[in-house]
Length: 401
Image (tube, rainbow, N blue to C red; front, side, top):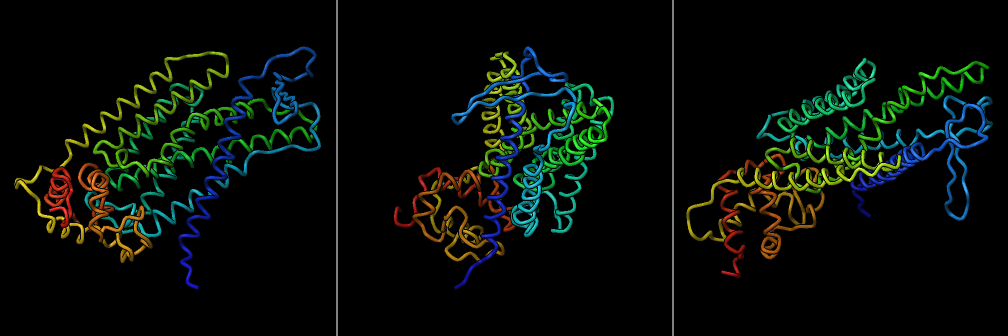
């Protein structure tokens, strides 16, 4: 029995990342919803700021929120932290497995910057750690007390990082590192601020003293930030499936615009929980999405290589280009290091597979130019133009001539 262990490790870590992420985001969304639906009722205990009755699964639930803490600590207290920790740990492991283990495949783009794998990994980790340092410093400054100002500055920090990373790494590698910066800030908020502050409150109460209300205020600040950063992170998690996002010449603008749309959607739901229906927010988010779609398409179109001059592209020329640039990965038995099976199951040694997937080939090699990965085969503009012309002429194989 011959088992290649790496794909199974990848699957296990990715599955853990999805499970932990769902648990973390789900609990985060629930508590935001709960917080916004609490109402001040009659005959509530001292210190209770609001309560909520809910029904689910055939049972009734009664939630109460204390402004600082109850007068007496309950015997059993539930904490929500491991969902965040395991999401971040599994995400870092995935980053290492997919992008750092063989950085030349998904991370390094030699047409932008010539880097060794070690240099690329160092740059990536520097941005991730640096993002948290800058974010935390902003939170601790007076700027952190002004939510709109803080949000605007943090957005500019991420925008600048996106611009820099998309000019250093492959588009896909750049996107995932912006996501790692955001995800690290979110997890670090839980690990360094939210949970420690909650533990201080518990310890103070057990000692018979009154907790400092500033501890809860600081934890609430970081929790609110996490709430707004969630949808941009989810966008980045799925973005590697959409080359029209990371493959655009202005991919950093595309990422920023769609992330901003996600923040608008999150803000709409936050307001909706409080009984405010601001329809302009989802409308604006939809307008940004549609505008980004046309913007990315226009930028992509201008980036395409000039069409070849001859009227008919011989299939032999197409086959030579594909054999030189594509089949090391896209074949029944890939020879490229780190590629164990043909990506997307596409074997380009077969003419009929080329014909059937011509439109997809055009998007990746001509329009967005995200293939070959990192252009490590140094596919030329003339070769891309030849492929584009062949596809525009009907993408006929040898049998169709």
